[in-house]
Image (cartoon, rainbow, N blue to C red; front, side, top):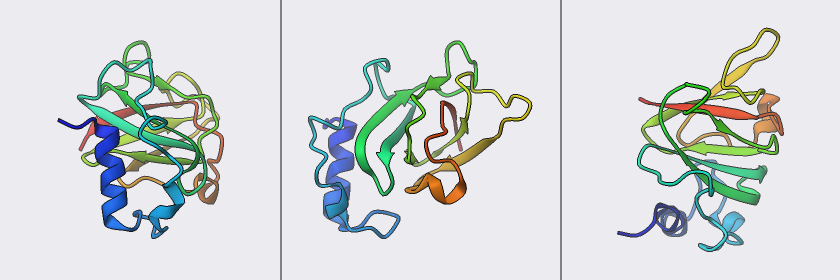
Length: 138
């Protein structure tokens, strides 16, 4: 079976357009070698999330794989706060947080996204703010 990252690239290449309506030539700079699961996530049996540092799936893009759930010690995926585009896999929804604890702390907010995600987080005031997320099956 083909790795999930390769499958996604093939889907993008064969459909001609992303869900945002952007032509796929906007992501052709991402090679299969560059587009790999994050090293801290050993498999992708459950929740996969595509994260790019720039809007419209541009910049440094990584496919993160992680477990379902919201336990901050075992099921919280931490990010570096540089996300500008985020796309969870089909069939899951993810809560994104401005802290690294996957928790809604006083004075902080969260957003929930599901497939196809958001290709321009600045449009909702979340550009470069996501520090962690937790995903759940729909």
